[in-house]
Image (cartoon, rainbow, N blue to C red; front, side):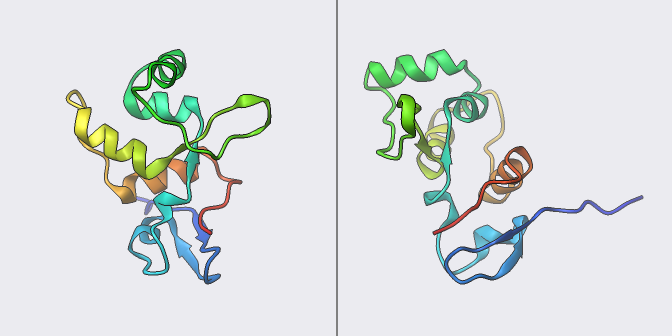
Length: 115
């Protein structure tokens, strides 16, 4: 049986090379406050459609971060979305910070985490 391999990431604050599974335990910072998700990512985590995410923002039920990209594409802070998921999720088990970082790095292998 082959061992599972996890992606390596670089902490932008201190430059340490870390396995994605150890990043949440890294004392330099909370990486989930520096990860911003698009509506598709949020929809997958909250088990809804991306259109529902936009509707919840317009209705004031979900707040977008000031970190937006050109063209009006909103970004959402990962920590806030995971906290919301923990408060509202009833059909799936909660996701740990470590599981989230592994999911994120596998989904977006070229994006940087941190700083």
